Image (cartoon, rainbow, N blue to C red; front, side, top):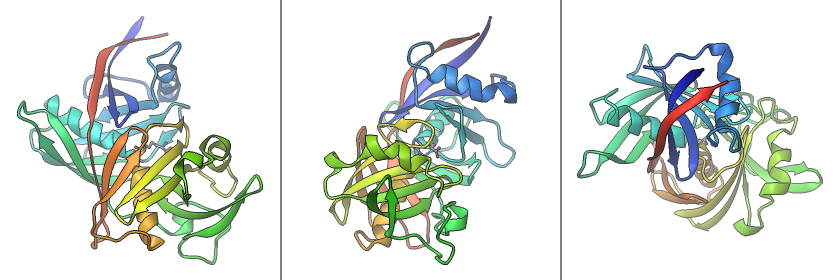
Length: 287
Ligand SMILES: N[C@@H](CCC[C@H](N)C(=O)O)C(=O)O
């Protein structure tokens, strides 16, 4: 029986099975099935998906992320913080500032260390948000350069949508009361609506002030999760585009699993700061 060494980590409860591809080998054709298998809470380890920590030709390390349905995404904010922590604490990198390659491009990570030389916080420069509908992608808004507070309807429910890509697609909806957000009922409907050719991550946001928001997410390929780093970035960008918050200012995002600080800088870059934690390590028996 083949075994696979893994580390389970989480960023604010958004948990993945991390595999060190500097040491492990998995056939490309097996990756999707393996992501589904390890993620299964009954017959696997249980997770929101699987993340590969890979060698890169253009950075010290590369991240590949698979949702728990086996689909591969181009970016994962909580995953990036965990990959950064893993890379430093396992000797893949020695410096506290370095680049990480993703399928969506290069990002840079900056580590805060505690007294035991462990990574306590990670700031990731997530780069510029993508706003053009063709590049998110979203169909049906051909005449617009941006989708900001546009009226849309899902199953007869009228909402206003702001669409943002952080390398992966996000649809953000502002609500008056986060506890009444239609996460369970509309999350899966929005995710697979035909207006999103690559499907979409759906986020509901209640503004507390111009520097603070509540956030809940239905993730593409994984369903409801405790947190979504790229989603929090997209929500902060959407708040600024809708004149509910300001650029170059720290915005506190309260997710189900804890808080992230997001800052959309004047130079266009989005900074995300938050924790990353190791849960356990082990061996998975591959059937
Ligand atoms: N949880 C992640 C995003 C993971 C990928 C997403 N579900 C997608 O398919 O785009 C995050 O923290 O950003």
